[in-house]
Image (cartoon, rainbow, N blue to C red; front, side, top):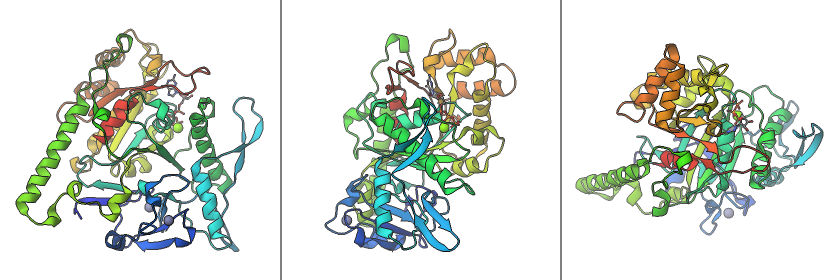
Length: 466
Ligand SMILES: Nc1nc2c(ncn2[C@@H]2O[C@H](COP(=O)(O)OP(=O)(O)OP(=O)(O)O)[C@@H](O)[C@H]2O)c(=O)[nH]1
Ligand SMILES: [Mg+2]
Ligand SMILES: [Zn+2]
Ligand SMILES: [Zn+2]
């Protein structure tokens, strides 16, 4: 195996090593479950269900699941722990919640595949003690190389002030209809980290509510009324994309329509070229050294573990605004050095000449200073996402240049002027911000348009995988 390849648990983000164990559960062969040592599984394929079982190819009802034994953060929100009884898995089919439209408490059924899979697990555990960790699809086992080179799994930290649109954008990144070009997700996985000390019911219903949101989107129904401010924690939203990029996927975007003029993006072709160049270099280096062991992973026949990683996965940590609004957040500091990309969101409406407060700009500046202060070798790639561009509030053009103009018109002093400097430098050598994306739902958010295309989403996702 390529020594640079590392595998990480998607829920706690630690690099899996000798002491770590995973349990696998195959819904097609529930009796075949086993706890396997991670290192051992590299050589004997014990992380797969069996020679003839293809559950590793699926995400969803038929797909192989793992849990990271003793995972520090990834606990199952449906496990009830009581004093005198063993931990019990209790996955409801429905939950009660206030309907945001008429404010009446209703019972809502959730039929996302995760609930079906967890109920199957519940049946399997029966009266025995339930493991306390959360299960995740085998394809979500993070696979990457240490050196931030192009990877098939990209972990993004989404942060920004409250209400800036993190959850809205993250949810659309899981939805095929949010995209306008060929690269579209084929499945998704959602997880809400249970709040410490909170009642099981509260954690479970937050999780069910998020799954319900996703379901409404899939059904093309209005879901924005269901968006609630998140509790100050992270949520995980993962989108799975088809295995290989076809050349069509990585074409530069079509020229924007005049009223939506955005800077021409040549980034995706550039990075594709850079990726190819890196692979050729690696291969040349390996051939020069000689010996099969040195052949880079991309050229090796599929080992049992690489079988699992056919999908490209985009993992979005959607961190509630409160965490970003304080000067120091332990949660963010931990995430900042373990993710591949830090995406800082700010909202276009804060650019209005008469905006009452510009919280999202101040938070973005605060976040940027933290990213800048990280040691080089620990610093993830960083981008800025300008949300709510359907509500673009200034006369300046909706493009990079107009954004710079609008920013400098409102803030010449203090933090805002420093934010301006960072924005001006974006994309240049050594700059903190690598790219700026402008995003908005085409046609705005309204009842007639519950599931719009999200402008800028394709570019963002392609950049993440580049
Ligand atoms: N018009 C418009 N509204 C948006 C857009 N993005 C989000 N919204 C709305 O803004 C509100 C807040 O969005 P959220 O995604 O919940 O914000 P958040 O950043 O997750 O907020 P917290 O979870 O509280 O930190 C919702 O009512 C969304 O419908 C956008 O691009 N355009
Ligand atoms: Mg949110
Ligand atoms: Zn199986
Ligand atoms: Zn873990």
